[in-house]
Image (cartoon, rainbow, N blue to C red; front, side, top):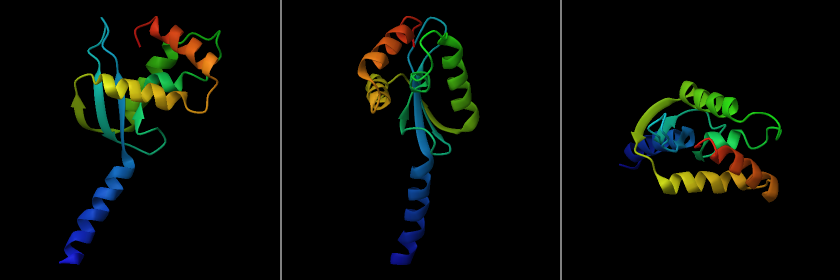
Length: 118
């Protein structure tokens, strides 16, 4: 009986290692939502395109970075579930993105990103 439980447990554990999500806020040009997908574990568990663009130079335009980040997230993974916009996931992704970064620079960049509805 134990052997029968070990294999499904290992499969679930492996899938859990590769399960990631990204959240897009709704805007006039997009529906927004949270997508759970299987992908390489090179992103945080709860991600956002904003996190990829926080370390770019302040004088660089932010919209191309955001679009490229979403494109990468969509092309690198296999979607498992697509859900409506989750404000809690969005806030969690922002808190994760702030970890280990300069608070003032991060807030300035997030304010710049927010002007474009991201």
